Amino acid sequence: TMTFYKVGDHLILEPVTEEEEASDAKLSISFSLDKKEELIHAMQKDGDAPFTSEEVNSMLEISSKEIRKLFSAFEKFIK
Image 1: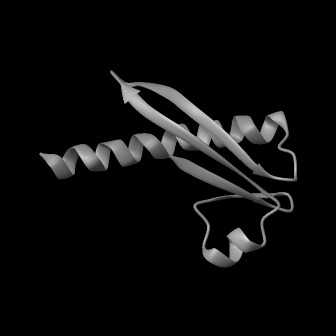
Image 2: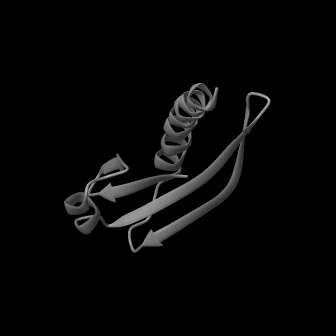
């Protein structure tokens, strides 16, 4: 799961406590990888501020790259 927080016009991935407290909204995206294909299992929004379609697309793109890094590191760790 990747969680983005919106602070003003900025999107922050996995922020520190101070950034969380200053946020206007957040979006959590839950992923898995199946044979190199990302599967989105859930998305949950919290907070009053809206996300634009461009922001959501950006978060999905960033999440895709970051989740692959995490799964790759995890695979190396369990070997």
